Length: 131
Image (tube, rainbow, N blue to C red; front, side, top):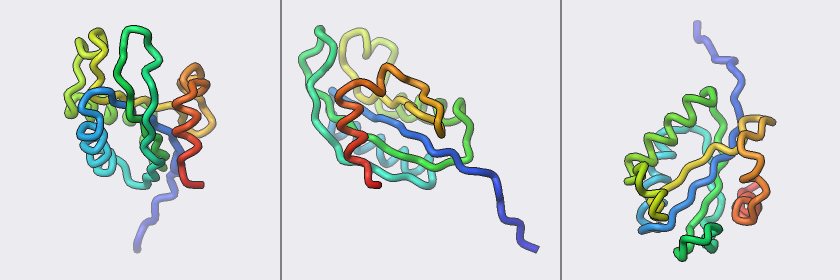
């Protein structure tokens, strides 16, 4: 007898951003995200100016919607592993060099980063997600 999993899937929004070798790092991160998560929908990649005053580099940002059975900590852990694989270090943020930044924004109806959800680049990236 076949058993079908009835574990509910959680819908999550994740934002990726890069300001250092952005096309290469975003492309690598997308490949790793596609391997890490099953049901995944990508929005368009958009270029946005840096929001920090100490950084003159533009960012490439992309929003992704996933449907997963994983819990919040497992998703964040997978994202941190992908960041590390793309060259993210503790020092990189302090010098304004971001090979890749991956943030879990929402988990079902739970908004994990409410301040980020108000940022203009997040709104633009969200608007590019397919319905």
